Structures are given as structure tokens and as C-alpha cells.
Picture 1 (cartoon, rainbow, N blue to C red):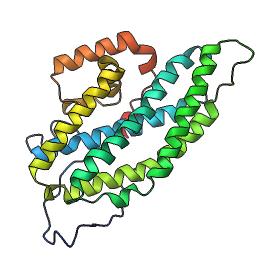
Picture 2 (picture 1 turned 90 degrees about the vertical axis):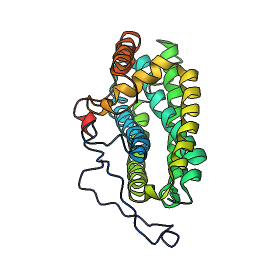
Picture 3 (picture 1 turned 180 degrees about the vertical axis):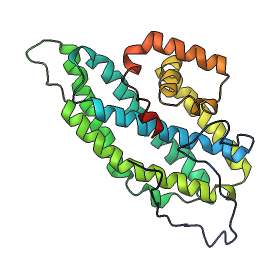
Picture 4 (picture 1 turned 120 degrees about the vertical axis):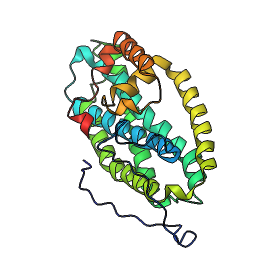
Length: 262
């Protein structure tokens, strides 16, 4: 588990192009709220999304790893839906990084060094999704004697290893983005925001707006919701209510209060 005292090693691959230091982006991942994040700073406002999606990934995958072994038979269908959303979110996030974020930022912040474990992360993610297909077949077969066994142990083991590899990878991205992100002109951030908003809109349309938004909100603390996702409090409240009304069984697998602090 990443901790507040963790030391991150990094290499500035663009140091020769940018000999002059820039002001670091100030975001404390362990203390995100309207009072601690300067959302009037356009670079901070753009970068906060990276931190929040990383928090969503950390928390949702940990929840999958923690619960897959012991989930009760009557709750397994809802668990499969929850776990599938966690792994598909990671898949989509990696696609957004590889095709949008990294290419746009490469002239200013080169994330190549933080991408060296992508292949193993992708392999574990793909294996996890395959295991969830087996889990879904188990659920669909109900009490059929030919039903595959519940693969809870393997889901937990695979996801635990995935989290172990993923956390340093995410931490390094955050470190590099904060140290060198101000090298990039605002036009780069605006370009990325337009592209990511389009990509996220398509994703939410594919899986359902209420489910997608409620799933995100389930993984953020009350203070974090003050800054992300960017929506009026009334809208956020309505989505939260509808989410629990429609998907309460699935969202129940989300993080505890303690897990929301990590």
C-alpha cells in the first residue's frame, strides 16, 4: 500500500530541454478538498483528475481483492458487476493515457520510465477479466452441477498482484506530473481536456451515465467530492441517490471509510 511517507524515485527525461526549474503543482493526494486544492489554477484544475482517477483505481481494485474470496453466493452476481467495472475502468484509463495523455505531454513530461510495467499490468488485467467471465458463468448456472467453481481465490490473488504493480506506477505518474507539469502550455491541457471529455462521454454512454457516475462517487470521500467530479452539489446528490436506488447491491462492495483515506 502506498503511504504518506513513501519515497518515489524518478528520472527527468526532458532535463536537457528544460534546464530552468518550474513551480511544482501542489496537490496532496492524501488531503484533497475544496480548501486544499486551488481549483482557480487551471493547471491544478486539469491535473486533479489524474489524482482522482488514480484514487478510484486504487480503491476499487483493493475492494475486489479484499472481497472476492469470501463473497456470499447470493451476492456474487452484484460482485461480478462491481469487479468488472473496476477492471474495465483500468483498461479505459490505460487507453486514455497511451493515446491521449502521454503523447500530448511527452515533449514536456516524458512518462516513458513510468510505463515499463504496463505489459505485466495489462496481462493481469486481462486475466482478471477472463476470471470474471468464469465468475459470471458460475452465477448464470446457479445450482447446475456442470457450473464452474467460483474463482474467488484466483480473482483475489490476481488483483492483489495487479495492485502491487500498479501503485508505484501511479505514484510515479503523479510525481512527474506535479514536478514538471507546468512546462506544458495551457493549450496542451485544454487540448487534453477536450479529448478526454469526449472519450469519457462515449464511455459513460456505453455503460450508462447513472451507473458510471454513481460508481465514481462511491469511491470518493465527502471532501474529495467537493472538487471532483466537477458538477453542482445538487446534481451530485441526485446521482448519488439514484445510484444507491438502482445499484445499491453493487455499490455495497465499495470502500470502507478507512479505505477512502488511502
